[in-house]
Image (cartoon, rainbow, N blue to C red; front, side, top):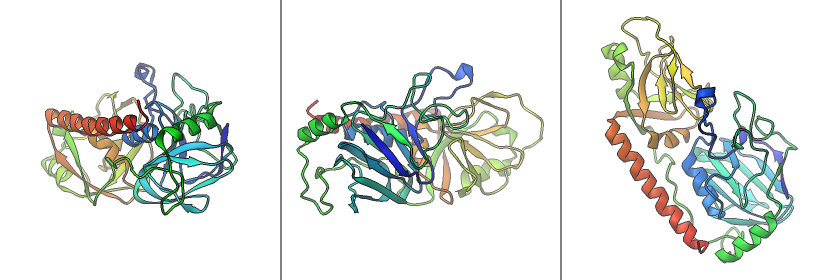
Length: 336
């Protein structure tokens, strides 16, 4: 039970929810850039939330399924086809053996997740199948996928696909002709328009920057640089000057930390970020908004809105409520 990569796309990796409890060893969770979309993709095919799936970026892959499978593509809106016809997004779709799924360019957003019933079964490393590119482990040989790669599925992938498809009562009565459902999962992280607004709190070293830099961070429109990746988004805009250039000690860094190196151009730390850093932290992005930032492609624009820790907590609570409501509805569709 396998799926074969015919064309890998721009950046396609295996990701699950990540590996936790290892920061003291210098290992970050990594995992999906948009964990909300991954959780929805898994729920759409009846998986547990932590199962491994494919994450692809800007330009998607072409995949041949060497067995029947139940799949879902969730997250960014891609120009995608199945067996030459439009692929319904954000919903479960039955894929017949030897069919090809092609994902072209992202039309809205940047990253999508392809989940398969039962999950992708690459060997786990330190309790996770997530690909950690900086350290070259996890996923498939610790790297992004290449043409010709073969990914293992669960031994009973075909049986799961048929059983879960039967529970959902899939039908081909839709414009695409694909066996799917009439409903779809909500898009909770896609940008409606740009610049997107991202909430952020003043960072530990906010006072180290001069008044003009403090204002500029929250007032300017920032552009995501092409020199951005899963470790961090480099943001282009006004130079953020410090009051004095004294060195600071390296200290823990986390997902959503915004550091400012000597260039004065901020870097928002993302899924594959380092565990410690010595650049001053001007801000910390609210956790609920990190997945939305992850959906910005290079050239996308963002503005930061000041918030408090309490407000950030409320944003996280609201997002979790919306996600849980969607997950309950999907579980009901499977009769669980």
